[in-house]
Length: 501
Image (cartoon, rainbow, N blue to C red):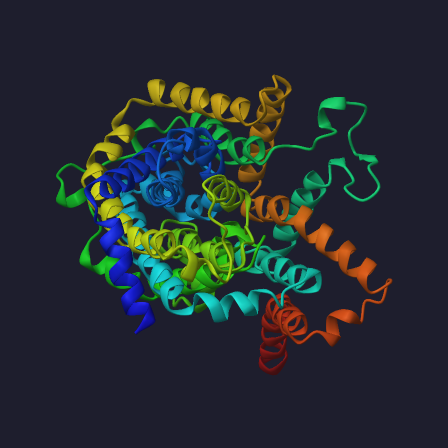
């Protein structure tokens, strides 16, 4: 009954006209700004937080939360239409979303992204409502060994992202791991692989790598093919720009997969929606009846990572609201805003400030509906971008890519890096090397190294500590099984040939 009473109180706060207005403003601004490459949820919240300074805590956090999950949805638009991931968690959406756009199903991909966001976001809020305190206690059991095991589990997905050649996938992963090691060692403060360039001391920004490897390489490949008629076809008619019943039916398990994986990974401080989206994509491909079609434009390849990306929002708020622990940069900014308003997140927040806690939770139910109503009608509008002639579209993509890369750090040097990664991505596509493992290694490598070294410092170099911790041992065992799957396949084929011979 406490939950029901809390929700009743929350909706009485969230349904106030002023709070409904701020919820809509947050969702709208988050979606619009989130579309711009390089501006993820954290940057968007930081930019727009000054708008909340004069508000009461309930209205302010409702608006910031709307910006948070609105920005998460916005990143899928450029991923699908232009192959430009708005943030790291949108990379997995590029794999099938952009291919759907190339196959003339851009509207369907955008519609599936909107529906997956709504379903997963709603599931995330329901789980936040029902399970926040107990799940927060489980999250506290995670330390450096568990995080290292989780990262290794994420990297093991290279098997599923490599396509036909595991060797090429592993080589791509190793390039990503090397790129993320460029910069300053966090433990020794020594520079690594900077080649005398002081601008590399701070490392390479993710957006420079992602935009170069995905967007610029696609432009170069399209220019080389000179196949203008098949670049980005868009069917006419509103019904043809929305997902069909068959496509939605094919995504039914992907919606569940993305919702659950996104929420439970989001609960872990520091894990992030990038890991959730890749794990969800990997699971969907692993259980699919046609895994060979992933990467060619299947709806499930959009629904699973987009669902995980948005369910992560509800999960990330669990440690923030119940323990006062921000799980990432976006929730850290929200924590600072709550402290600024005199609200102390933690176990007593439900009792001390029920208007803020339950008002925020109730507003997320409302905000998810607002996002669906706001974005589904815009699907045909966004899809028209692909009708722009290629001689206009390609320079536009190049311009957006350059602005996105430059805005991430404000360094001219990054534009040169952007060109270099564009060439690298083009060569990888040309010689059939998968690009997703490179991005996966780049995103997870730094956190994985930090977790491993912290673990070894805690255990004084004793690596058996992983086997002594049940959660870490279980995840490592799963990772090993995933990595051994191709070897079992090779052994099966060898055994079959031997029997037939």
